Image (tube, rainbow over all chains, first blue to last red; front, side, top):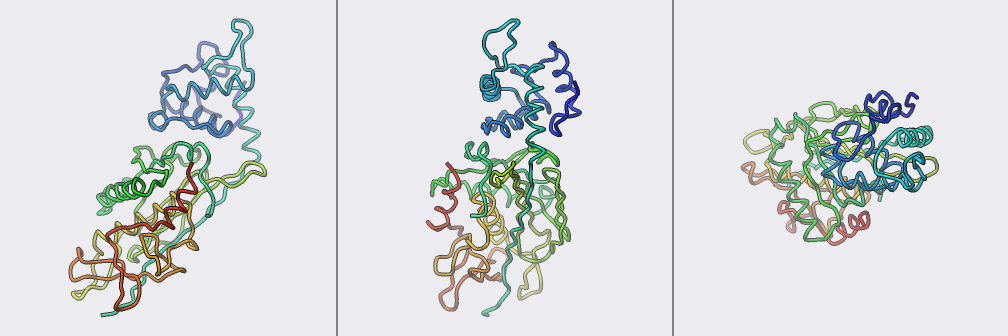
Length: 125
Length: 220
């Protein structure tokens, strides 16, 4: 499977995680791919990731909790070896996030607003 | 209120602020640090519900990653890129002014929610002193940047500027007509509000209960 969302597409680690079980992404991981997972979680589920984890692009506890909530909500469970969702981003999770992101991205509007402020130079001298 | 920050950002009660390399190299660098401290002082005193945190990560040009707010110094053009959108507009290097560009996003029929802000300050804000034109003092620079942070943090537009009857750091046109008051030295420069002889001058930086309430309404 090749990822299709603008956020995930072309990211080598996410592409790998979508195709290979050993390439799954686990707590403790660091990098741009983690930042994209954090963004996806925020966008799709409105969750708040800890600022420190976002700044460090680190798969810390708040990211792990958000992954678990995402998977639980969507019943993403690999029945071949588990009975409940976990906090790991593997093939099924990447695919689900990518699909959700594509739907969202196709329905997104960006607006730019301008706020300008300037001091006058009237003199009372 | 123009809009609100996206929920994951609002729920963090923090906004991360990235200073560009150009800003760090300029005389705005210490003002940037001081402005964050000043905003946070006001936030604590007025329980605004949001604080600013300096970030080392620039906003990503195409995604949500990176800081929520970027502050840059501009001399001629204000340029940035966020969420895949290019910003490029004229910006005088010498006027005593500030500019905040707000990038909002909506999904489907949902409401617009703010994702990024790009703040610009002039590279050479100049006033006419008795001895000739010179760059304005740090007090006025501080006023400008804290003022822009109020716009960004509170998502307040110019129609919500403070009136001359209740002046504070958020005074501005078209509600009021704050003036640059050039002192005999840069340290004496102020923002002046009102008519003679009842001027109010800034700094010191203050925030009215009205403006605090407007910001607070935007944060949980």
